[in-house]
Length: 88
Image (cartoon, rainbow, N blue to C red; front, top):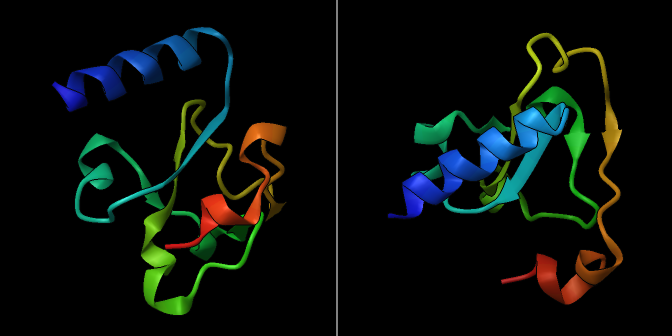
């Protein structure tokens, strides 16, 4: 069921013209839906992620060719821009 929600949400974001989608989640789960480690592409989380959890910070491009053309630190919505949301 969770996979269908992810796929539906990605479809809605694609239709809305969103280029990149980021998740901080289980690195064994999200890659099956097209997510890949974001840090290796120069796309940093808004708060530090310990090296042992770096694979949990992931990105998916919804418009082909975007990854590799942008770099930097993500700015997120105010509701998520709080350190407690970025720690275990």
